[in-house]
Image 1 (cartoon, rainbow, N blue to C red):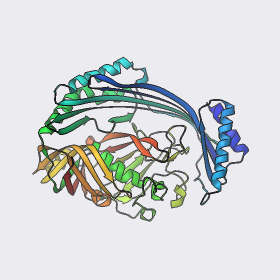
Image 2: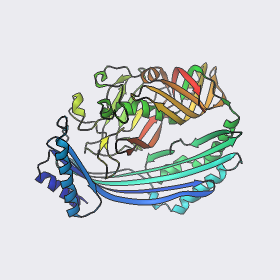
Image 3: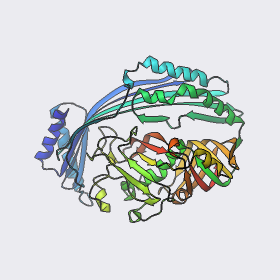
Image 4: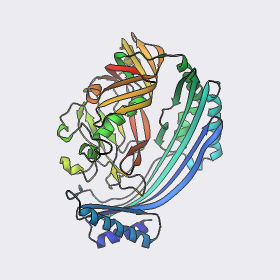
Length: 481
């Protein structure tokens, strides 16, 4: 594949581009799902192609193709150069990339068991056994379970001399039960909602979830929610479980810290950010115990790789340090606009046919030192919420509302009863500023987001958010549904 990629670099150098790169990508994805006793979906597909990016006289050009011949690669490279020349007629200013050393390297996701070597029959057998447990009560109207596996192999060459091969592998699964009675509909999921849990790794990721062992609890909690009272509205203390906190991190910190969004490049479509550049190193984003770290080297992380799609070596850095805004998600194009001499390396593309853009890296809330029992025990009047059901956040990532599958009221340090349809809302810096305790390392887990959308045309990216349950004081609580 490097021989094929070299043809694009040859053309780029011939036309004396400022910068050029080519990414040859082979992607295999397998998805299996069972719903109400039947196979709901079964796909296994492979794609192969290349994307060529050039910076010519300060303007970008990009083109892609899937005809795997040197002639086709050369034609695609020429098309990318022609697009760059056309873009130059309209550019507001020249693009300048932050420097990065050239690398020759191979990197791959560590794994124990190749999920594509596990027979489809074995996977379906597990899903059908889960399905049978979920449908153990006639009030369960929808029982659903699924698995998904993805392997992406990339050969990346640049005009600067980098020659990088990477193989990323991820595995994921989920199950859910939806109970219906007298017009009320309640769903419980495991390990989490919106596609379930996905992590970097092989079949061992699925085994570690022990999904069959959790199916009965999921079913019974869905049924119990039918009989539960609705969440009472009011201002009270809130404890957020790790799986819900992952989405809180994603929406109110991850997207807010994408530098292209901060600089206004996403504003007409996906919005901007309140975390503007003059706040860097000064603005109090949260309480002093709030530390959020981006990490492209994190074991199990879906955004973990040796290098990003700018050929920048993987790094670890603070987005929020001791409650202060301390960093952004950057690429080589925009990092210089805030005085950085090197990108932190958050540039990725959705396959070969998309141009790389700034994406959220693995972003985690560092654990605290409070045992979970103490986290609950110090609450006089509060609620604990788990598993996201809905979310809404404004164009600047400030005002938000989240709805969860389930809640438990807390009175005088004790969880008392289950409630349904809980929601909470807040303003990002005030909310993170109200965080007064984070559970210790023993409660810390990594949660995968496998379907983050961004860009025009739309691209999907994957990343993880690590978190322990955390406590927030005097939050506005309500109900949805």
